Structure formats: C-alpha cells, structure tokens
Amino acid sequence: MYQLLIHTHSGLRWIVLLTLIIAIVNSFGKTNGSRAFTNRDKRLALMAMIFTHLQLVIGLILYFVSPRVIFSAESMKDPLSRFYLIEHLVIMLLAIILITIGYSRAKRAIDEGKKFRNVLVFYLIGLILILIGIPWPFRYEVAGWF
Ligand code: HEM
Image (cartoon, rainbow, N blue to C red; front, side):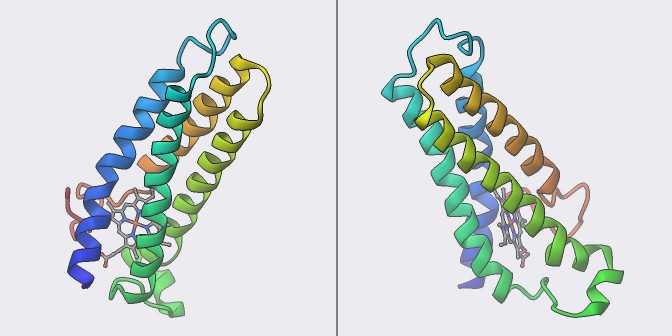
C-alpha cells in the first residue's frame, strides 16, 4: 500500500507540472481582455487544480504513514527529515492554496482579461513553489524521478 502511494505521488508530479504549464501557457497574451475566457480555458485551469488537489490527498496520507516523516525534535537537525516533516508540507500547501485562490478568482472575475491574469499569476507562483518543493533526486539521493 505504501509503495503504491509513493509511486502514485511521485509519478503524479509530472501530470501536475504538465497541466500547470498548459494552463499558464494558455493564459499568456490573453490578459488584456481581447479574448473571452471560454469553457475550454476554464477546463484547462480546472484540470491543473484537480491534479494538485489529488496530490494533496495522497501527500497527506503519506505524511502519516511514511517512515521518512518522523515526529520528533531531532528531525529538525537532519536536513532530509526536516525537509519531509516541514519544508515539503509547507511549500506544497502554500502552492496548492495559491492555485485554488487563482482558480476561484478566475471563475468569479467579471473582466475576461482578469480571469486569464488570475490563472497566469497564481498558477505561475504555484508552479515555481512546487518546483522548489519537489524532492528532486539531484538534491536528495533517496528520492526518485518517477
Ligand atoms: C503538488 C504538490 C506535491 C508534489 C508535486 C509532490 C511531489 C512529491 C515527490 C516527487 C515526492 C518524492 C517521491 C519519491 O521519493 O520518489 C514526494 C514525497 C512525499 N510527499 Fe509530496 N508532493 C506534493 C504535495 C505533498 C503534500 C501536500 C504532502 C503532505 C501533506 C506531501 C507529502 C509527501 C511525503 C510524506 C513524501 C515522502 C514519502 C516517502 O518517501 O516516504 N506531498 N512528494
């Protein structure tokens, strides 16, 4: 069960990154209000948000079953333990909150350009945070690519 969760969580990162990039690229050049925010644009933004939320659910389960998350003051002294106990959690939560705010603001905005701007700005900051928060194998030997 743990192995299945970790591989799903690890592999899903690529879908999260891809759907975020698609939603961001789709919003480029449309923030001036020259184009309507269609159902297709909304669906692209929604897809990215759904995958980040799915990642949050799996991440939360992993947080309580992973042997890498050790609830002890000692964890703060070890960079790898601190990363999984605090840093990964806080950075990813912040990113997911921003992406969710961006989506709901895009949905509520009246101005067409503002809808795209909300997706562009909030999703871009979210993407940067996620890229920083991922345990890439070149930073942490124990992490994998998939
Ligand atoms: C978009 C958000 C997220 C992304 C892209 C992401 C990505 C990843 C990746 C790539 C790994 C390493 C997997 C490996 O070793 O191969 C990982 C590990 C982990 N993630 Fe996330 N994560 C996200 C959100 C979260 C959240 C919100 C939590 C906790 C609430 C979380 C908890 C964990 C834990 C506990 C591990 C370590 C599992 C282990 O190695 O035993 N993740 N995450």
